[in-house]
Length: 615
Ligand code: SAT
Ligand code: MN
Image (cartoon, rainbow, N blue to C red; front, top):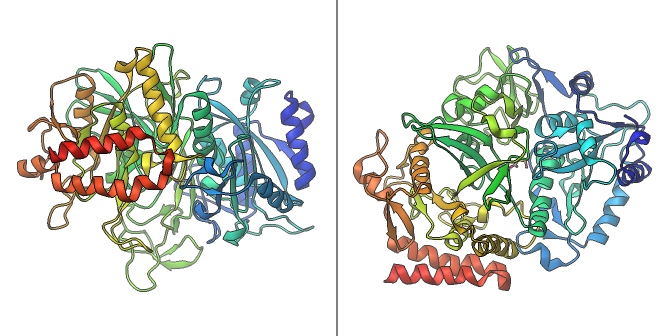
């Protein structure tokens, strides 16, 4: 499609301005077809950037530049007009100054390249919870990834119509080509991290990204739109855009509930989303593995959609035991980035479940290495893994064997429970239900993981708080974000729908004993905690009230093999002294960060828990 054929005058004007600024050799509006995907892949293979995988149909391996392997948090900006709107967890910069600086960089940045215009829908096309974005990019890698991760193409333009709302997203890899020059197999990007930009303009709902071609820096529908900008839209419009997986759980009687769960990174979120229950008769299916958008329906019930249509999952550590369903999801039609390449033409990574076949393997930097005999992470001086620790797979969600039938239902799925959790070797019980909505918001606000190895300036044992697992992804002041959560609960209650609010739970799969051993086996056994949550949502009398919330009654959760009755009791008990320290830490080190924007309701919650602990 040509720009002239676009019906939306605002979109046309915006693209024309970008063309004038970035001066690409040509412009293509993406139609989202399989033919388009195949054509882009051919360009990437011919250019030496993608390697077809003999062992996996329609699958390709990419190796990025070593400077371009993860989200660039230090170069991620929230450029609100008012500095105070960005809050203490974001890098703020003045929007006018930033736009001027970036416009200078964008000038001529697509010379020698094609500008692809990608109309995409976050959420099922036409859903009233979905939003439309348009990304312009000079990266064919971005086009193919967006094809998998979002709904792309003409069908989106049809919904957009002549005057619909879209989030405009600029992206350039910042590598113009001179006459006759080509990428020649080298991942194009701006190698100087300090010249990469991932910028958000929350007042105007715009995204400008420059210099990186990787993941969330470049696939702008994901963290940039679906979380940072969407969190602002959600605040302004009265809904929730959250860093949550969505799972469907069915009990042995065939009754169904949906849960949305937030965890900081490295807590096994994708694994939980695709869990295979060990509890007989229970079934877990996947609606989403990373992001949930939720709106209240006219019936007062909160409905969630997964705005994405694919999984952009961390490869290392994924294996048939940790996540069988993810391994099944990536058998074909998958893009791999920064994994190892085996002699027989397959991908490989640390903790994939087996050593690498053959004598040699190509590592993520493209170097030939001896094929590892086992899948352990190499340790010691100068040891380098074969796959980058943040190597990823991009796979269509529909390929997941346990994708829920309703995962694309435009009206969303009704959410019964929220779960928050982190890696907490001490103090936090296996599962705990909040006393009420505000107590639940309190739980979300103190979510975090313990730092194990002494990292940078933080001592081991320190809790790195990541409220609602949203710290890197909230597009505005987190104090206001907590308030938004509190307000939504109050509004539902005022409207007489308090009983329909999701119940809120705090969980911890990572408790350790005195010998530093994990007390809970995790993975499929987490279904035992989920089953308890399910029954709580049904009002089953299976809990005891404690100062920190409602904990499972003794024997309410059957211990899995290898967990003694004593250990089970400890996992479900209140560590009074530990919680006193927790409360003191929140009061001294966590809440003050948010200044006077920290809602007074949360301080009141802190006081109330402290009083109960002392009582
Ligand atoms: O690179 S992404 O932002 O898409 C994934 C992540 O870092 O969580
Ligand atoms: Mn995530």
